Image (cartoon, rainbow, N blue to C red):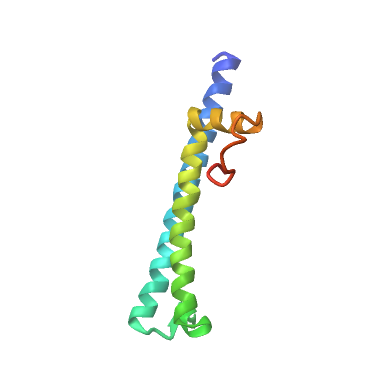
Length: 109
């Protein structure tokens, strides 16, 4: 196999592994947040032999923390998909060239 083809194959395998890792982290964040919500609904004092999050930090803080994990997980995955998009890369390039001086900088990461 030529060197160029081997490099392309390795790059594709690395990209696929990174993509799987991103999705796995999103699923894990959703799972943990669902466990926190489940403990709140069941009023469970412990989870895996340790004190539950809502017992340790209060129901309000535990619920907000679990909701934050759901939102943050989807946000990070959404931004990754956008960054892979060619249009988004061009927008970032234009922003760096100050072509969007009239637009607020909050909408582009």
